[in-house]
Length: 138
Image 1: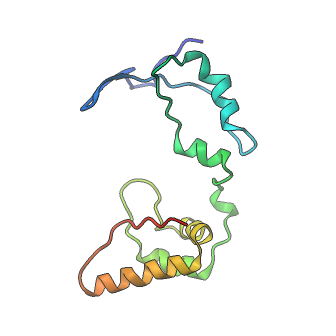
Image 2: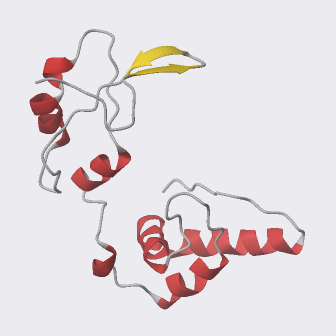
């Protein structure tokens, strides 16, 4: 199989860390039932050499872990609808500013941790401080 760049992209890139070649690998549509290791073996293994690094899109990993959901399938709680109004909405990505993504956050880390983070953020705002993105490990 011949590897070629995506439209408008170059295979060679230069970064502060050196020059790199990147080769997008076309796969079938990845579904929840797919095993990531099998996908790698089927599509990428033959192109890999010693010292190569394989990068996989976060979305593909989330799909195979069963952590990607169509927005229409997420039942949003009142808490998620309320809290998402107070979240910083970045210019990129969805973030937690949508009720559906806030609901998924609540499900993943738990209501107590989300409420604690909201409380801390509220206290910070009283003092004119913004905490930006808070990452909580469950």
